[in-house]
Amino acid sequence: MLEKLKEGLRKAIDKLRGTVDKSKIDEMIIEIQRALLASDVDVNLVFQLSEKIRKRALEEKPKEGLTLKEHTIYVVFEELANILGKEAKIKLEKGRIMLVGLFGSGKTTTAVKLANFYRKKGMSVAVTSCDTYRPAAMEQLEQLAKKANISCFLLKEEKDPRRIATIALEELKKYDIIIFDTAGRDALDEELAKELVDLANIIKPIEILLVVPADLGQVAGIQAQEFNKLVGITGIIVTKLDSTAKGGGALTSARFTDSTVKFITVGEKIDDIELYDSKRFVSRLLGFGDMETLMEKVKEVAKPEIAEKIIKEDFDLEDFCAQIEMMQKTGPIDKILEMLGLRIPQSKNIDLNIQEKKMEKWKHIVKSMTIEERKNPEIIDNSRVRRIARGSGVKEEDVRELLSTYKNMKKMMKVMKKPLLRGGLDIFKKFKL
Image 1 (tube, rainbow, N blue to C red):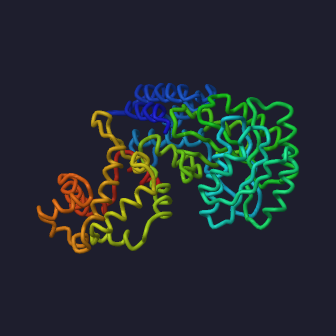
Image 2: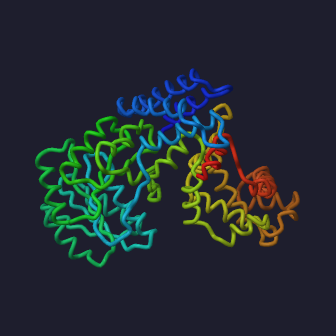
Image 3: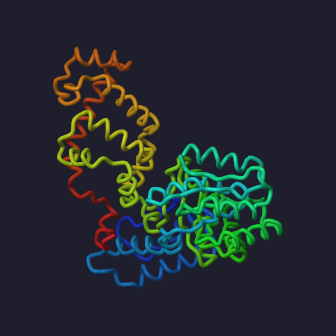
């Protein structure tokens, strides 16, 4: 996610090595400017940010217990969080949500992801489409909703989006949340403008969310202004942040309206949508991790009894296998590492896809063991290794690697119980973040 921006910001922080003075702070600010401008952040916003960082870093008295370096890093963190938006607040109440945006923004996919998000909050949700302009738009929504087991209402033969909205409101009134997908265009023309205004008047949504792709650039701000004048958007969803897009223009687009970025999508899976929090987001960009988001994801898939065993270092290979499945549901390894604030240097040349395939192989190995072997891995000798390898269709060294990893993990849990503080994380501890 936004790899170039991450690299640029971390390179800027690296300028603070050794004794920090005005020249080092100026060098850091230049690197921050380069990183943000290269990521399509509006030039005026970048220079406003630069001046705020310089003024606060040099003139503001550091809080008690902070060095000048720590104070400067925290100033950068806070000002970046300010420029990249505010903490998102959503309405967990019965109502309708209307998605708007141009072609290619990802509205239809986002509609289903958003529905899944509200469903996990305990609300009954349905999706519908008022897009009669794009061929196969309704079929796409239908397929995605069916795959995600989300209720979907469509009128494929109806050509008037206003009539579709009216009927959908009546048919879906038993649901807490109804999400309306709307038509897009290559540009916000007069026909689309009138259609969206009419739909907003019929639907009377509690949220009108503008869907903006991360690769839109600085045009995102202008687009946000246009849609806001038209229908009064209440928030923005930035999509495709998992791609090679620069992202800065989309993330700062809310500053051109009275709204905020409310959600970001970070992958193709239905769970790859996050409630946006600029502080958490900037923390990840700077390499300080995002434990809150990670723990929220873990809670969704975790089995409390297994977590308790792992903490007590009393887990067997069956629990180890269940933990692997939990990790896979939480997300790809690279995203988990990012939320932990960990980076694998490119020089290490570690292919995370290979690691994920390896974990899949380990599950098959465990399933080929007897119950006794899973409960007491120490009884597995060479003859048992050979039998397990044959039964799971892997090499003997794969079985031995699994056993070695399991033993190392038990040892590692003793270390993981202790607070993990790295570099900049100490600063956030002092600020109770």
